[in-house]
Length: 357
Image (cartoon, rainbow, N blue to C red; front, side, top):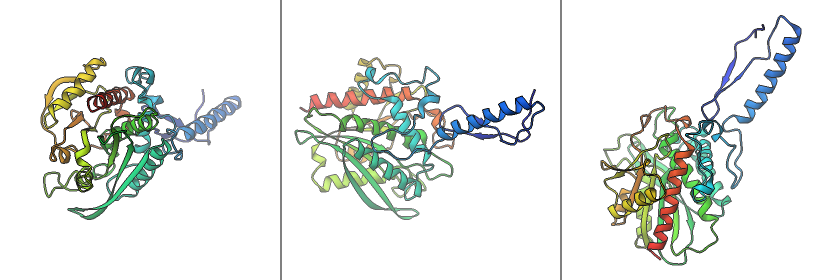
């Protein structure tokens, strides 16, 4: 029997498991046990330091250190091989999400969102995407704020545009890291960009993947237009440039990574486009995740495009118990859910390419 003379320090990395680092100031009654204990503590400390969140640097197109290992220990949450999901890697999407969460709360104009923006641009350029950024100032209830939309553009042979949307900001709330709300869809769209920007076969329509700032309200969603700053800016900018008429369809992903994801048809969404998405999911065998029920109308980043008579669909699981709470953390997400939703969106894009050939 042996004892450690100091209390243990607990380090929580991304995922569900934790590692315990015992203090090096251990004393034991038996010399041999002391030597063995110190060796084990030293080994555990080095392993934990290697796996701590945020310890890796940005590295072009490479995904961050595999944070999905802990989640994938539960076979239910493990992502299927990318070969089974049209090439979409749910584990990689989860890892991208974990990296975003490691920056901490990401409200507009914060240091963390600036680091997030640098990371998104670095990753997208590493994937070979053409990247357009739009720095704009938004008038908000707390004053003018600098915001940035980031758009990855995959060229097409024709004039059409298929527009994919996500927001990467988080609610302005202390200790809110938005793993699902802002993180999951952004991690998914990074993996989508990796696939589409790397596609060599020409497609008839361009695909633009917009990473939007300022979706969340700064004070009150229902007052003073305090919401969807990034999507309203993008829609207005595209209208001025004459690009809005080229958009064939808009697909918004928001809150798509929880365990046991259940996605209902959102009532504001364009019926034919929602039917296409849910029919694609059924064809792929995902009826239990893309369920046939309808949900109430949701105000989200698709509204500025619906308001300009564009077909748009919101893919969102709002039945998430940790929505807008500090418990919206990475351990609540599932690489499998991200793989399923990513597969459906990727195949829907293929269907839209055929429809608007």
